[in-house]
Image 1 (cartoon, rainbow, N blue to C red):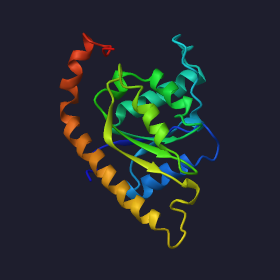
Image 2: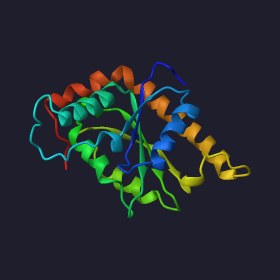
Image 3: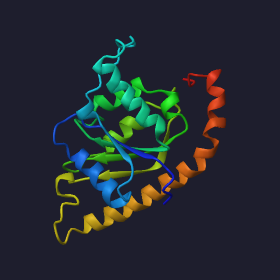
Image 4: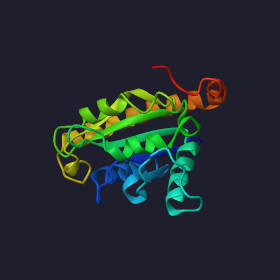
Length: 202
């Protein structure tokens, strides 16, 4: 995997002590060689987007700017999404309202569904249907679903799923890196038309 690519992991949970955060930290340390930034939506507590500008130099404005800059500087993104009541958390969609094409256009995104039981697929399906129209971000056709998250990669012996999911994660990250490396040199060209056509068709 190229070390020239900047990967940002977005933890979509806005719950304290989230398994999603632990999974993000594990992925960075074990599959990304300790490289990559983490945007933790619980820690940042972004204000609810309402279309109005935030007061300049306010804490809320600085939080939003930090997230925007983190996503802008990334070449590829990983959204780590817990499934709550069959949905992706509202905080992730709120982040996608704050961030647009400047931060996200033509950047590959690996979706990672996380569930404490046997869920995860609904969260993936939910977010695949939103967030991309105007931002032009690119959800990879490959995704991960990490079930029984409380027991995943915590050192329990004999868990075949730990090995399988580790191998599947390496494969998915290799796909992400391949997309990112291919898109990085042409992103500027791809974004030229957004000046005239800023909104996706619907």
